[in-house]
Length: 304
Image 1 (cartoon, rainbow, N blue to C red):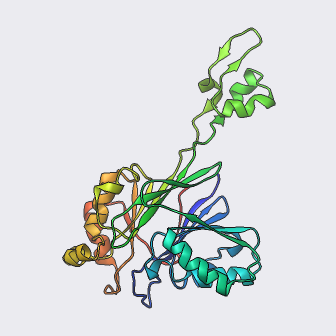
Image 2: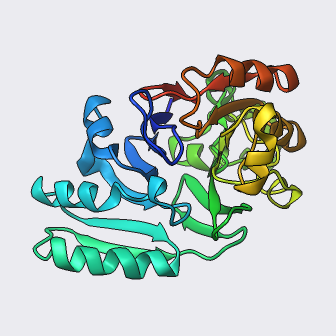
Image 3: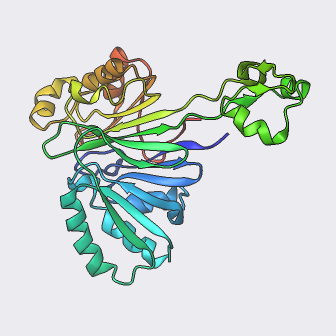
């Protein structure tokens, strides 16, 4: 079965601590790496987690706060020193493209790979698509223009029921069409329904990344029915006033987002530096949405 794996490189908030790095994640989808945000320390965590920089071709930046993008110049510089080839596409807003474009032009003048900027707009928009996966933006509510990212597998082909295809003598050249849902017509004109020749396809996985944001109904439709939701939970419930003033979420608000979205699983992160452990945060979130886990550096989750 194809790989769809989440790697947590950083799950702290603005101020790094001895326990947490700023925000960064890597999706390993069929051995192609997609990075979400790039706080300081990201390249070191990639090395520690055994993630191959040469397989990283897309970086998605949610917004222009330093804890989500200060690691980008160092990472790109290291990739250049390692001789990465091909293209690196950075999905970022217009201001970010100008800012980091000037930096790369100065520090990475002899870069061996092409750096492209895909300018993303605020809202719910498809920003990347290939034969197997679609990535779209999630409109969040923060102090600066901010989006999350939804990674959704495309529908998969059905599984061949070998006993039935052998029985009806389905030729090999027809198998892909059968996997894609076509019926089979016998020489006498009889139609064999696809449901007799195949078994259900594997389910398509949806993963949503929501950081940083206040709880709002605006982004719920985009993340509806996700299998896994990463949602910031910067503060515990007692600090709801701080969360509101800084356009962040509490543990309970993250859990409420999971309920409204009908998510199957919730990962909370973006922890304030005030917490020396996150057990309180986990307990509060689980009181509302039991299927909650804590993000942590080095955590790997196999979605498939």
